[in-house]
Length: 304
Image (cartoon, rainbow, N blue to C red):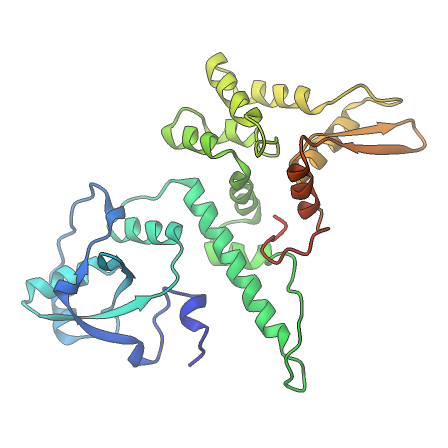
């Protein structure tokens, strides 16, 4: 059995039956992430399946300080109790990201998961897993000797799209939401700010200031539409007047660059040659810009 299998995909049931154990039902507990969701009533088919211990009867759980927390298979756990069975087949998953745990639990209880940031964190976690997996595969040379090989800068967008069943545009949009100020994310969760409004703030600096959060509050206080918020963003990113052309194409290029590096940028163009000015408020912000440009050899940075 691949020693990385359980780590790479914590929710895949391994073919090796030894990874599934019959554990006492009292050792398991429902997840805290179920919130106010009521317990589903197990159908007769669930109870019969548990009695027969069919291969598809598996409760997926993870070890916590409070005990084994059920991530999926809540109906099988309840069915085992209805059938007066002392034990139930359990697969204990390891290294499960919190975002993934929350989504799986809510899905198991039939609760629609609508938090875009949890989904974005889950996609990012899968992106990191894919990159580490690619590094492991490329680390072994043809003659079997290990060598140090730097993995790809980013996981394939097409592979991620297939894994999550969404188009690449939607996937990239979700990943960009991770670059929002945590306070702005909370405004979206509360419904004070729409995802459309939040999208206009992506790329604006927030690490060393309240710039992004302050603009979000201004959008809410003024009741701006998404189009008005985008116009305000363009005015902020336009920067100082430039020598030569100052048309919409130049401003659009500035916005693209600013969004990619997470800081304000200004293009000066005289029709024949030009220069790019990148603004940063501190050396820490500069380090972040360098990482986005791929200058620093940081294995954890996926360049998204």
